[in-house]
Amino acid sequence: MNRKAFLAGDTLVYVYSILALTVIAVVFSIVFALATPENKLKELLSREYTTEIVKPEIQVYDYINYYLNTNLKYEKKLVSLKELLPLYCYNQDENLKKYIQRITYNLLPKEIGVHTLCIDKNSKCEDLLGTSDSKGSRFIKSNNFFIQEGNLKNPKLITLYGFNKNICLEIESINILEDNFIEQTFSEKEFKNKIEAAENRVKETGLNKESPSTTLLSPKGDLWFFTRKDWCNINEDDCHKNKYISSEDLIKCNGDYEICSV
Amino acid sequence: MFSLNKKGMLYEIGLIFFVIIILSAALYNILTSQSLTSQIGKTPADIIRVDKEAQLKLDLIEKASTYYIYNAIIDLASNSGYNKEQLNLCQDWNKRKECILTQDKLKENLRTYLRSSFNDLTKQEKLNFYNIDINILDNKLIVVDFNGQNLKFSNNNNVEYTIHNKFRKQAVYDLNKIINLYNYFSSQVSLNSCPAKESIEPICIEENGFLKFELKQNKFILENSLEYPIELVIKFKLKKSNKAEII
View 1 (spheres, each protein chain N blue to C red):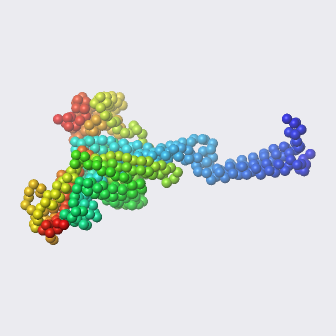
View 2 (view 1 turned 30 degrees about the horizontal axis):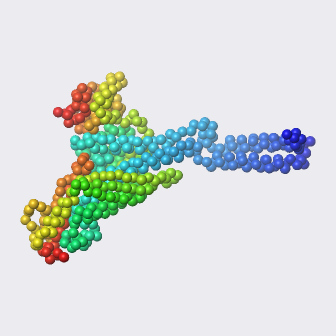
View 3 (view 1 turned 90 degrees about the vertical axis):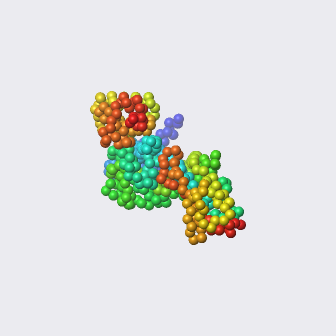
């Protein structure tokens, strides 16, 4: 390298450069510090980046699928709420409504509100939306029925299409854990194992009525709730009728209410 | 020593302006940009959200298709087996050539009713129309193929994708019941009043020069599961002295 060429000019130019850049750096540091909003400053410094804010919005679809597609026994047939909700809107059967409410109470965590409105086939749920009422429901019509009461803070709106009637479903969109889902079983062996596991869990930790781990769905679509030592059937509302069955007998009948109740 | 009349000072001015411009741009960007945390992972989250919403919507549409098939059967039966255009011409189930009912005609009319109502649903969901094909097996198993092409889903923002959705549904109903009734009443020489109850027993009412018939049938059982409280009724009417209408 040509040393003369590299040091061309005077060192004075470099001295001025450094001085000028120092002044600019000081001025801009002050401007940056004063002008940048505090929250943005914190973000820049802390680097706590997270995607948590969008997680509940995605997760809501998991439990809507779980809620609508879980097969349960109704009038000796295996059906999902995806079929029962349209049927209710068609026949307005009060017993079916109670069944849906009972099942919802057991399938979903208690803090999740589910509000429903039956509408005509050609109506749209969006047409019936207004500002939220005291329960957080956005349906203007007052004849919505609460499958599960609860304040809706950030509800998700789902339209179910039925037989000459459509159903608007408002469901709370909050972050819930998979542990909040009830235990489902699909084989005799799995059912037996989970009965024993539920018994052991209650022995060790005590009975927690709010815990879904004490509710078990048999392969035949019957929902069983575990009390201190016995089980009762939720589909038939036996828990309120004090009709219980021992774990041993429940294993023998494989959780099939038709056989267990003989 | 600190003289400013050096040639290099020309570059000095350029350097200062360059630095000021860069730093000002950085400041402007910080002040006007969105919150950093809301941007991170936003696009993948949007894609997942659109995908999940699409899957749920398609699942519910597929479920609804069963109801629409049975509704189309109800429409067909209550309109004497004709579509709405044919019904104007063949209101009294007469024997004009174009009013003769065949299984092919019933199948095509069923497809017309189903396509019209089902595509109202997809329109409501802002989706493309589905192609619908119907096949009838063993005279009473109605097999319906739904084929939705280029169904668009988006979050009205930065994510949009199109998918194809094909599925098959079955319904059990014997369309020959309508044809048998048609053939039976077509074979009657003349009907001036309600016939005596015979093997075919539709309810008959005389009204304004017409004989109105209604044949109630069993409640629907949807997909071998729920019994629906809907009774399908085959409705048709004949002009009194039907013979005069034969062309």
